[in-house]
Image 1 (cartoon, helix red, strand yellow):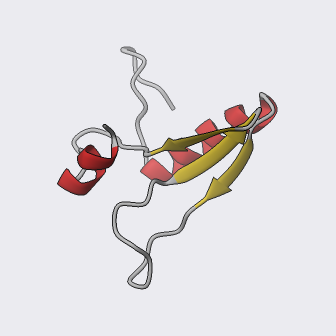
Image 2 (cartoon, rainbow, N blue to C red):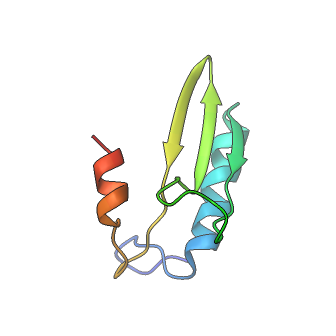
Length: 75
């Protein structure tokens, strides 16, 4: 679901699912992480591998932003 400006409207989990499907179709191996009390804080939503390269993705929909810990991991 997109509005006229091309921005995604809906849940972050729906955005994550659509993006992961796109990456899988492009040949990426995608691993979803599921947050919880027993998981280390700040782990990205998805981790992917493509041609020996690891890529991590954190999906956010406005008005949500990266936490300070996630911003630190970005650098």
